[in-house]
Length: 98
Image (cartoon, rainbow, N blue to C red):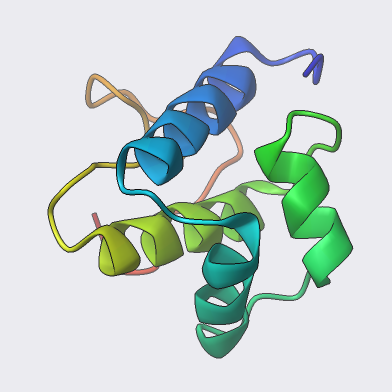
C-alpha cells in the first residue's frame, strides 16, 4: 500500500499480520470495528486489510483496536500513535487512549 507515509503502511502491515496470526477474517474484524463506531464500510475495511486502500488514522486505529479485542492477547496490532512510542504528525490517540 503506497500512502506516502511509511508509518501508515507499517501500521497496515502489522495489523494484517496480527489479524492473520489470530486467525481472524476481514469480516470478523469489520463487524467488531463497526461495533466500535467505525465509519468505513465492510468493503473499505477489507481493502485496507489487503493493502489496497488507505484509511484515516482514527479509522486505522479502530481497525487495530478491533483486531486486538478479537485476538484476546494472541496478537498485537499497533496504533497510529507509533510503534516505538513516537507520535506520527497529525494523528490522534488510539481509541483507548494509548
